[in-house]
Length: 225
Image (cartoon, rainbow, N blue to C red; front, side, top):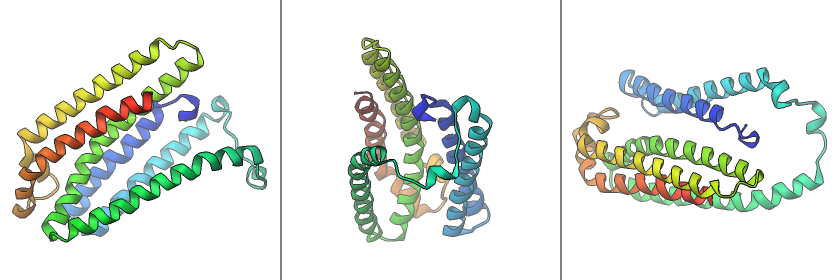
């Protein structure tokens, strides 16, 4: 869908998954005390629902999108396309693998500080994912607009798009920073009521503000360029 310059529907499907994941986390973990299994179930259910919605949309829009799948599409390899995918895919795979391996070492380091810090890291990741969702959605929208304007050779609009996306994401980062600094216990308390976890929140606030701005502002400029 993004390849066809439709960033609105992917944003909707991702938003459904994210909001549903947060709600089910609260219901399964806090309400039903299902623990890690509840968190896993919330992720699987929310992603599955989002996938079903996207498939239904693609099926209903198959004529407009010229979206057809046949058995022969899986029975042979397009050498030219395979070469292009390999050139693009290998660097992306290395990048993704290095990020995930780095996360393993970071999580190992976090876990060494005890259960409370490890539990708080999970809560912090949930909050960070909200800002990440917003920035990614705006970045994808900006990327689509930039591609369209480059294709139409209206290059003067590209810097304006980059500045607009940066301004919006900067505003979001500022609002989220103000909220989390003003109401840390209320925000973190949504996910946990344990005093040991909430006591770590105050020390985490400067880190949260840095993460908000790092995720929102530079990403939009980088993608638009």
